[in-house]
Image (cartoon, rainbow, N blue to C red; front, side, top):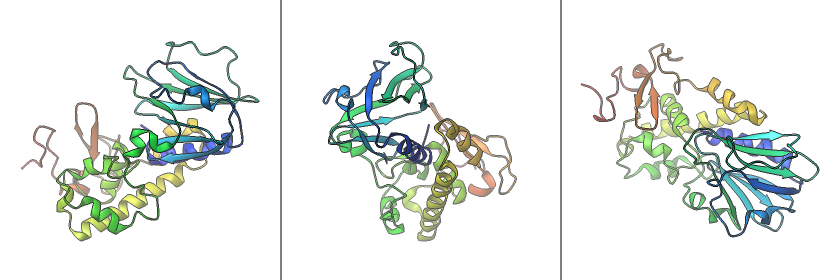
Length: 287
């Protein structure tokens, strides 16, 4: 799933190619992709894109004096830029294509989604906060207003494990499974630690790890074409998706805890005092 750094890079990539261009047509190819009906999707056609913004993991195409076209790529969605689009309109229900946006004068992009779980979502709204997922977002960790004091306040009273808190979009916008693993590894913190139990020093260290990890990932992603971002993300990860490989910090073996629809990776030496984490049923360190 693309997270804050990749979506930030996509926003920059699209800004360079869309701002000042006119949308000729938007064609959904999957029934499940469009989540709104008023205004209709065709309301963006004939309008000029004036900005491309990121809200957490959402991308927002702003048009002149008109609606916003907002989309969330979810777990298996992606954006494919096309300098030349096929002349024939997309055939609904055929293959991974979910939506096509064509620009006046040529070019545009396809949104695709692999797999059988169709979660990619497209919204045509008057204002970005009309999208429920955007309205619920917590503060953006790249904004100057996201200070250490704000972060510490978010953790206060949180009796959940810190891994879940970092992934909760209503607490902090944009962090998903991969970068929560990376942040906790950089902070040398167990993903099972309860957020409310963090000391001031631990909270400060986690805040610094969060900012550094995300900003470094954004810088690595900046300037890459849309088709290169998935591969670039993998090369920058130190523990996530690297089960069985040596930790680049201490050399211990990266381990994994599996859940019903996801998994987390961590280094026992760096994060849990050398003890392997229990499975989901135990939810505590093995004794």
